[in-house]
Length: 218
Image (cartoon, rainbow, N blue to C red; front, side, top):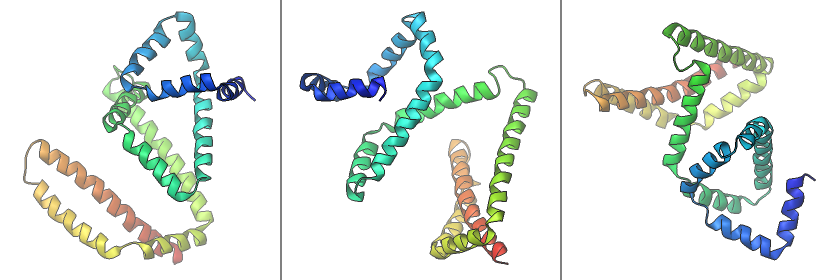
């Protein structure tokens, strides 16, 4: 057992300490997190450097913790699991989640391209990212080709279970939306166009699945 597990076992076995932890958990407020992070990172240089040095181990620990939580949740009865996850999902602040993606997206862009990168450097970084994605896609498709008969059966089964009539109606609706999106100007037009592109991508992916199944059967 690690130190954290031993300490936690002692806390759970001590009623007074357990009650303190439960009271603290009930009083968790999202607004207090920024101050805690600032104090933890910049309150003492020695602690800050230790935190950054231990960050890879901390991330690995967090990943293993999330994996074990998933394993334990998989052992719960399905009704109880749905109830628990429904309560958790209903309490998550969607706006904070959106800001999280924005902030870490900016961090990723700075790491990948750089804050003051020239257009040529940005283009080179984008090409490298696309080439890496193509390499992963090639490895994936090679594995699929090695199991083509199994994949063909799976794709065929998926296509049979899809509501193709509803898909056809959706494509007709997309055509009507495309005609309407071409007329308005400004922000509404941009949003409509982005939504159209996303929906068209989903529809195209379904059509690709159908074509792949037919080709693999042949």
